[in-house]
Image 1 (cartoon, rainbow, N blue to C red):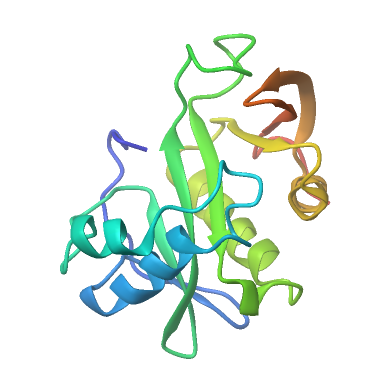
Image 2: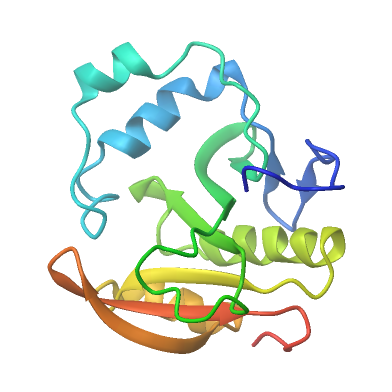
Length: 182
């Protein structure tokens, strides 16, 4: 989120059974570039960015980005999860009361299939529910992205609509701390 209102940022690191969600650090630069340049990671996100471009534009020291957590496993970044301000004018926003925060996540391919995404996203949603009680969170993904669709269901997101954008069918769902997650 670009503005977290009364929420102090950064929070203390969030610890799960296997992971730590923390603020980005300079040591994470190579992993961020790897995420953004990965064809596998960006299969459903419009394709990867060129590594040479990323080497030029990704800062050596990351600036503070409220809502952005590094997913850390044993001291190394394996991905990121973020809660950004959802643009009410963007595709998929059907009602102004659906939610202002949008969940996003990326994991390096070597971290796929081990439940890290579910664990990290659940922890981030738990933090969000404590920090901003009662505020809903939205999620958009391509329906072709089966992993993301399963994760949305596991986290307790409820489908609001499907729509066409970027040449593919998109799924738009909402989560609320008032709704028990599965």
